[in-house]
Image 1 (cartoon, rainbow, N blue to C red):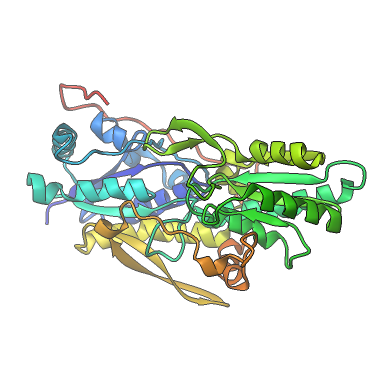
Image 2: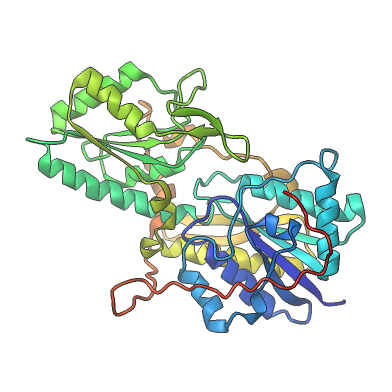
Length: 421
């Protein structure tokens, strides 16, 4: 078997642990030098392949690659770019083959969520549809935890830990001040169609009397009057009300509470701030003093408080992707299988990319309380192991985390033509 180079790329919104998957891919590939030559990373995801902007990871030191495991964001740059179907844009696939041939690339590892796994699946079809042999393995990643088949998604556990802790700490703040100051606090978290991250906020309290008092899930239709009555009830009973709201909270007719009227690069509705929208409702109807916050990038960049479980699983998915490839598997994605919740035990299996692509795993209805505003004991049992353990990055003498910045040297292009995105 001739030695082929590999192409690895990061896609979609980055996470606190996506670089741990990159570390798993690169370190494992280096252990299989009899089958894999160099690992080229795409500069800004699949765009790097189309533009022939390939980063040579072989010049990075062993120490720097290892440091990826505790470094947040996307070390090689990510993108929101979805390949069209073969029939719609054959030129993209012809370009990929042209670049792959020029650089002897026979392995493709794409690290991302549902839209990214769709891209990975399309690339895996180059062999069948265009006659170019390529081994393609998806590497799961998404803070939204909405990929099917896998028990959880690398990236989610760390966001869940951040949101649970932030909710608990903010609730303690509000509780201490509510007598003469703020009575309502709203934390907006990510989650377009699936309420997994919002559900994690529920870990902050152990019973219905503890914050958060209200969780808004995309899976449960939002009703303004019921919501306001619940806020008023919580303030009168506890003196304050803490709300964790998914950005994807929507009315029964499917309209997002925070629809900004625009589309993102993947064609999804651009959401524009459910927290201030809810805060205005509270102010106008109830008159309570409020504060709101949007976790936004903070929740997915918070490597300083990452879940050790999440870090270990992210690395394991990158490692498994390479091991799958060198063993002859193709067009699959490694997945996490839960074998036991307490004590937590998991193993690795696989799912076909053809079934993973563009599928969303929403919150099971039995994970949401009957009133639609909280999480059940079964949900708590599912979530709890995913936020367990700490894996702090090393800190320097100035008190700042020591994150790595790679050389990221782009190799010389071999093709004469550029490609317009």
